[in-house]
Structure formats: C-alpha cells, structure tokens
Length: 134
Image 1 (tube, rainbow, N blue to C red):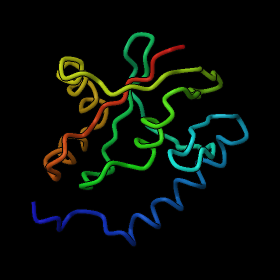
Image 2 (image 1 turned 180 degrees about the vertical axis):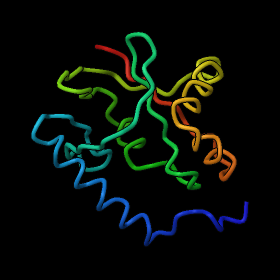
Image 3 (image 1 turned 30 degrees about the vertical axis):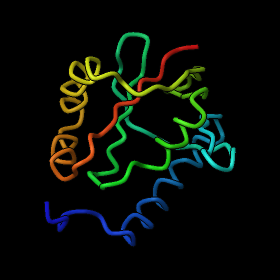
C-alpha cells in the first residue's frame, strides 16, 4: 500500500466538482443529507445495494485512508431522506454490525467490483451504512 494509485487531494477537488453537478439534479427533487458540523442540508449522490427494505451505501472514498464527509454527516445526523428514482424515502442511517458486514460486503463487491480493490488500498475497514426505513 504505497498509495501510488490513491487519488490526490487535487483529484478529489475535481471529483467533488463533478459530484456537485450530479447533486444539483437531485436538489430539484429533494434528496437530502445534513452536514455534520454545520447542520446544513446537503445532497450526496451514492450508488447503493438493496437489502430487503433497506438501502446499503459503501463509505469507500476510493480506498482513501479517511472516511468520506457524507459518512460523518450521517453519523452526526442519522435521520435523513434518500431518493431512489422518483421515490423519496425517510430513513435512519447506522453502520452495519460485523455480522451484517460479513453478509453485505460480498453483495456490495458484486454490485461494484472496485470496492474490493479499494479495501485492499486502505488500512481502514470500509464502512457499510444501512439506511433503514423510518
């Protein structure tokens, strides 16, 4: 893990700009997350893995050694909404237990294979966040 394939801070700046363009589309349709420190409502598009009535999101940040900002936002403010297609759901976020992670990690990797390489790039365990209906 020499970090040579890790995105640089400059690269993250550009990636975040791209994500913000995508997020603007969701602003029109009310998909919302709240900032951890500011309390500001934020929109963060995410890929997800369906798990029965729950939605699972992966806090990978491409294998970066630090958790993504949205992960901290959800830990600080777990009650939020998600939008899947035209459906807006009210949910509560929580980190998967070790037993849940053991079952869900293979599902996440099968839905997006790079998650496996992201986990190999970092020493942190990439969290799985379960969004449960409220």
